[in-house]
Amino acid sequence: MNLTISTSKVQKTGDVSSPRSPSLNSSPLVKKRSRSFSLSASNVADMFSLEGKVAIVTGGYGVIGSALCRGLAKAGCTVGILGRNKEKAQALMVELKQQGSSVFTAVADVTDKDALQKIALEATSKYGSIDILVNCAGGNQSENTISGDDRTFFDLSPESFDNVMNLNFKGAVLCSQVFGKLMAESGSGNIVNITSLAAFQSTITNVCGYSAAKAALQNFTAFLATHLAQKYGPSIRVNAIAPGFFLAEQNRHLLLEEDGVSFTPRAKKIIAKTPMNRFGNSEELQGPLLFLCSDASKFVTGTVVVVDGGFTAYSGV
Image (tube, rainbow, N blue to C red; front, side, top):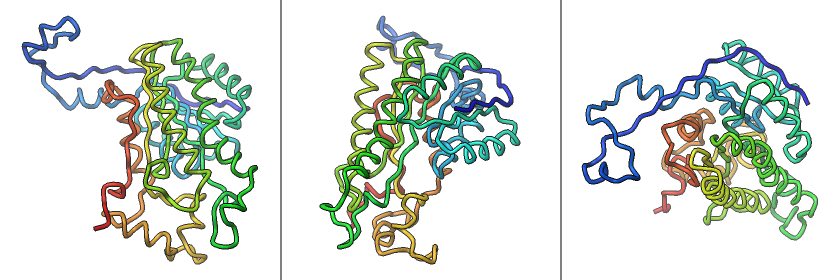
């Protein structure tokens, strides 16, 4: 386990709300607001600011994870890049440090609870708290992917199925236990799980274990949001982002031909079902993440934000 610190930040807070009607203002359950309140550029900036917050991003050096780390860093977070590959984590840390961001690396397997607890202890001793957890570690394995007659559903090995379930689901549960406990103790925090369109009712073929794991993670999001809010208070929120189809290392072999440019038949089906007629760019997940982690979404918990270019909205007709 490796933990490295660079620059420090100063925390800012902001609170934005809108005027209430007279009938609502009279309720003891509603805090009265000034009728002279107006929304300004500075209010909006404060509402979305994460200045001084500390975030852990698992799988933080992957295609999607690194984009999320960059977004959090730009919003003022101290970012912890957690994953198994020390070299990749440090490479991203160097990039972010050069931009003046506060960043550290934490080398561990998300399924190793003892290692996660050591990271939590060391991180809190340096930063005081963990305010944000992004469960982004995940992906599929070729051994767990149905491939024509070469590998049918009946050929999938229990070992590869377990590996995919552990990485995508169990790891998120363990990280939520370890870092979520710190949030429960402090009374505030945000957990964001990165799920997938594979978790939805409209089935994505060939990725049995991955789909099952992401569906479990989506259900876990609703459970944990309810549990933490009811038991530890409304300032601890849990939400999810479900990316549509984004090119990443794990799915490249499914979406691109051997030339690395041409679309496979599967990719062509995806594009035909996507009204925006393209794959997503990982940077396009930064906005939804900042929304869910900031005061802009103070009354949002247990929800899934879909970022898919209209894929789930389009009937195909």
